[in-house]
Length: 270
Image (cartoon, rainbow, N blue to C red; front, side, top):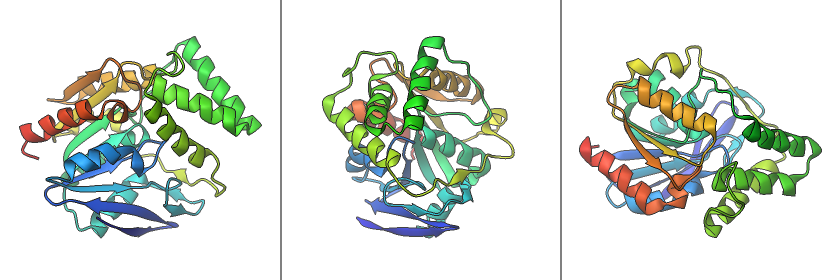
């Protein structure tokens, strides 16, 4: 494995690269860092070049309080590592950013795997019970009650917002809790994401590369709505539903997730 930093305007992105073969780039969730992909790195580095990196404000990456484009940052990572084209796998926030990168830089994406993410330019009205949970998260954040905030966020994103406490495997909950705690207690000012001038929601019909949508049935209704939007809007899209997973199916069910990803790669010789 080699690792290092990619210089970007107002910051430096930490990356890890391992394995040999056609490249796969993993983009982590907004509740995580690159370690959320440990089970995928171990599997796919057997026959692929696997790249993970920490986004601005996460993990070991460094940033000033600047406006930035996640599309530009991902491009900078690929350019630094001299990767012309890659399969891009993104979860949650990383799924939305990977989709944005696909519509902005179609020649750089051999295939897109969107996992429990968003679609820029789309909207969704959540049911009252779910909205109440996120209102509670906002109240805890404003009160700076970090322990209670981290506990609730861990429950929402691992168990599912309306699921019983402790539904997800303990090891997954503990890993996610550590990552969320680090994010919520960072002291540096947050950088601000610049939105696309032409959001992805209006450009789905232009996507020509193979696309795999992965969604957990216990995830938020907004994420499920985004999965439905992609499924309906992208020609030839494939979809895998995890009935027993929430927001991080690759962590809850790594073997099943890896099988779905490997099958997808094999179908398109990626």
